[in-house]
Length: 246
Image (cartoon, rainbow, N blue to C red):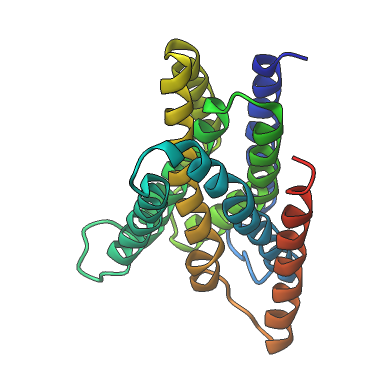
């Protein structure tokens, strides 16, 4: 299987996962309720994202930028983290013009596009596969959570479908754009481009798996917090173990 075909299949699977995950919360528009299984699944996916950032994306970017006498990879990573932190803090300002639910949607849409570009710019099966696993593990819980947030904001069904559709298509669009850029640029420039997106994506992965995860989880019982921690640790451990082989 060629890398281009693999990325195309990955984009289709990610898109389908996003749409399937929102079917249930849309059916429960009036009473979204509390979903312990979703919280646990999201914790596991956050662990996968955290491990992908720390054991794969950021180390690969640091290696590529090693010839440059400046920590560019760390700079891009910090930029990704801080930009998403700024957007979420902006959403929490009571006098800000947009609804909080829409700002959360914008954050997830931008993140969805960035992770797609990060997958598209990579030129090896191993790294592309790792990014795909991280995305697919988190995509269903992100879609579900986004649908629940939009439900609680009393947005119209038309607006919810439009936002979910935009969110679902952004990762495949990012994959397409990243693949085009990687093929158009020269080999060395393409590697630096992929490294830059990997580092930036690592920063967004770090944010989504830590502060965003903490801020957007609502636990009914304290025992859920401990359960989430163990599932997050499981996801992190899996990505750490995978680093031995790829």
